[in-house]
Length: 93
Image 1 (tube, rainbow, N blue to C red):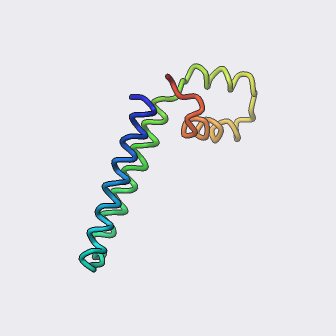
Image 2 (cartoon, rainbow, N blue to C red):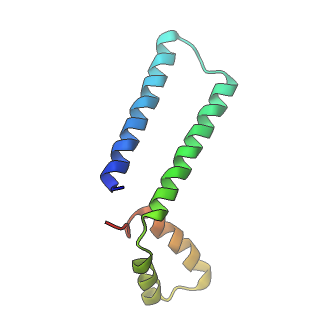
């Protein structure tokens, strides 16, 4: 999957969520606690899926070469790996 595909899917998800919000506002209904929790769970799952896709799309060879060049201390290296993976700077194309 390409970055454009991810962006298109994110926009579709955003529009769907916006439509749900507008539906609630039109009915003058506030969500129940269970609905709020379900929505929070949904958002958390979307976030986790996005992170997994970004990590899977990271060029691990380029990341390894960068780590070799930087020679970071061990306590910083793991955070640097996570930051680079989720930033998308080393995404495979």
